[in-house]
Length: 276
Image (cartoon, rainbow, N blue to C red):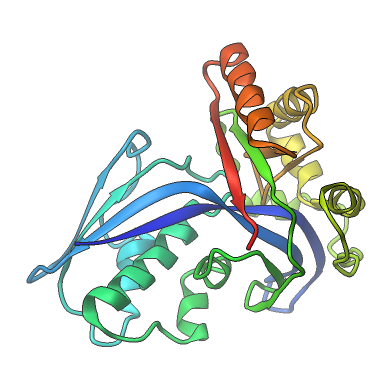
């Protein structure tokens, strides 16, 4: 049996810098990954099948609409596999759950079937976030998601992810942008936690304002994180998940405990960010 983690993808900063003629938006983003996510297992089988378990399995399709099965079909030499998805990440949450699952499926099936990963175009055909999710390393993502480059070493980072259990559709968030041509990220430059937070604070998530209009609960989440001693709090992706960044694991664990206690209906997860 082969196992793969599909870690939560976090856009520490997300700038929308333009829009192509075909409708795709141009992005400029610093992406990192959590040490927490969905879990996939792969076993040899005569046919291709998908089973979904886990605390957030409800509502996850098991048919051809699922990106995991779509990922299997773009692999050269696809045969059979029994795939199980243990779902821990909320849906339509701005932390790349479906894309992370698809990327984990590509990695796992590549190992199971002893075949190479698909080319960039095939991975991109599954979704703009799939290429960046193929590797858990911090990355600078531009274009529509296909242009990836490494970033300078990040300091140790700990985070709390919070979702008010509100799904935010990506399309309306992009449609609600006041401007689709915004400044790019500043050149990445930092030296230690404080200077990294100072750099990050000067960046933005351009989707936060339109998402807040669609889901005002995001504002409540951000206020909770900002009152929990987070060095910085921001929305990830197109929402509704927000993150708080902390200098130590102990601070993140304590902040998660307090938010969970105050808001038992929210999804709250403390995590160590993968910075290397």
